[in-house]
Amino acid sequence: MASVAVTVASMFFSGGCRTFRLPTAARALGLCRHALNKNYNKHALNRRSRRSRNSNTILAVETNSTTVDTAKLTATSSSESYQNYDRLLPCPSHKSPPRIEHLVVSEEGTVLEFICKSLDLPPLYVADLIRFGAVHYALVCPQPPPNATEEQIRIFQEVTDPLVLRKRASIKGKTVREAQKTFRITYVDQFVEPGMYLRVHVHPKRFPRCYEIDWRSRIIAVTESYVVLDKPAGTSVGGTTDNIEESCATFATRALGLTTPLMTTHQIDNCTEGCVVLARTKEYCSVFHGKIREKKVKKLYLALAASPLPTGIITHYMRPFNMAPRLVSQDFTKGWHLCQLEVMECRKVPWPTTFIQDKYCVEDCGWPSEDYAYECKINLLTGRTHQIRAQFAACKAPLVGDSMYMPAAIAEMANPGLNPFGKYKKDFSCESEKETAIINWIAQHGKEPSVAVGLQACQISWDDDEHFYNAGTPWWRIETA
Image: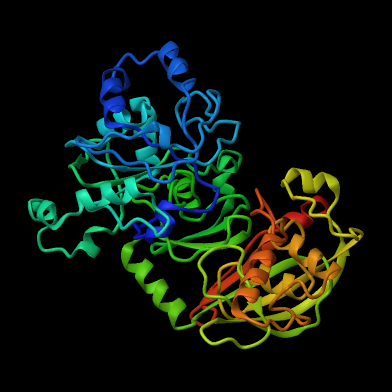
């Protein structure tokens, strides 16, 4: 995945799903010798992992001239909050709680040394994080959000003072906004200087299913320009913000013995399986992106829905908010994105057995009737994130196993006026009342599925079917195939 610029709010805050602590310069410097010890042994590792860590501080920052008053911290986690740190590979069987640390560099050196000092992490573990793509930097610390503390704002003002920035040769010729863009750290010896910002995803999102797949058997086609993969559910096409190691592109590259890494040309959800095109060259990656823009790429999907849908075109409008769950409305709303798909076929099929659901970690979302499901063939006319899942749920036909959208569909069936964008939406007397209803509606949704939902990208073609590929049997049919 390419380096990405991120918004200030997303770097510093993300509801309750990220944990932080605020290390002091003194503490970090006092532990640096231990953190960088080449003979870092198990006893030392266990000892450090048991130290108490604060889990509710918003921004982790560090400067040479600043120490942090720990009395200001609102809460401190127990001494057993975090597991002992081992290597990231092999993939651990346990799932670590999310943890992202935000740091401002206080002294020049290598990124590996600074993170080891600041976060008291073993060098090998930090090296693994960098290999996974879990460490990002910006030349200048981004603007703190409105709810930042006075201390955080003060530190930001110190390191971004115009007089301080003028002395930094690394940002000459750049605007402050350009210097605040974040990029991925790519090697352990990368130089960091005072005032730089670091974001460390201490617990990257993991994809253990990558190690269970026979990747060679998932290759549909290999050409000079591209590879077509039958992507397994529970995997990422090109990686995530914090994990580019455990991805389809990486494992398919290795399975084929290629010396040049495969590149992503388009995405499908982690919980979706099916046809994905990976480019072998930068040139073809650009060519394929052009074909997508020019609508020369046709994608057909198979969806396993909990209720039947009539054939024909379904139209919704999706809220332009880049965060799940994606909210859709049947009514046109200015600024919202058009979502269209065509249901070509819909046939009644047996609901997947308990055995097959367990095999693919399909979640039981509490649908009232699980005797029959409905397999729909879909021509995707617009390609929005979560589009099929959100539109089917809005039609009271959520996908089997969709733990994010099915709970909301069930809640709306029980209380038709719950959805502020639904058929039975209420009239709101003021904007704040509507905003409260939207927040409540979002709360009805669940979490993202861990592995599979009833969705397969079953066919992809382009250039008037000159290139035409089909995926294998969808997971819900494998037992009887």
